Length: 197
Ligand SMILES: [Ca+2]
Image 1 (spheres, helix red, strand yellow):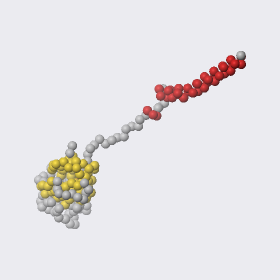
Image 2 (cartoon, helix red, strand yellow):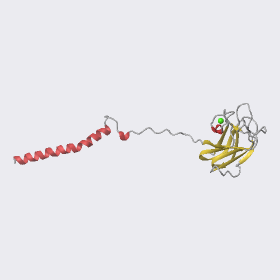
Image 3 (cartoon, protein in one colour):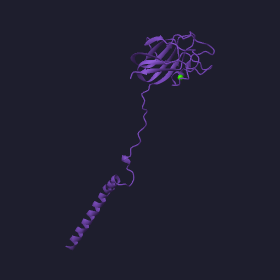
Image 4 (cartoon, protein in one colour):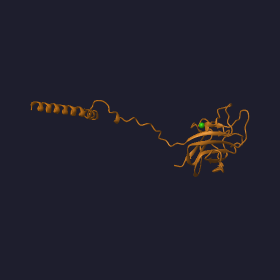
């Protein structure tokens, strides 16, 4: 009888010992979740990435028929750099190619636009300021079809805005047919589009 009781006690001790061990991980886990003892990786979120909050269309010059890069900084890219003090100017140093002159600009992303703007050069000279123009759009950069709009800019240094029915496109082309003083050049401080929104 005494042996049986001892065996039962031993079994009971073993049972509670095993139960305590089995319980241990759960106890530790609960302590980790609720206790102050250190960070809990699963609940630590990384800082959110900064997302540029802008819908601005990025303009990239893909072609100009002519640009002066020796006598002055007349690169075509100056027409979309956001700086009114820099401008695209067709060649004049060793030769002055005749009209028409044109600049092709890619829109990223392709966008629905309802117009474009032209800012003439903002220094004291009028050389190259556009008079007669044609404006085209394209989806592939090759086929521009018929002009979306054509007209003539007035004189003056103010920004000219031309609007038309909204059209989706990936490329625009501004073709200059004449200069306000009938010289051979074309210049542009800034060319931009008017988004349809
Ligand atoms: Ca510029």
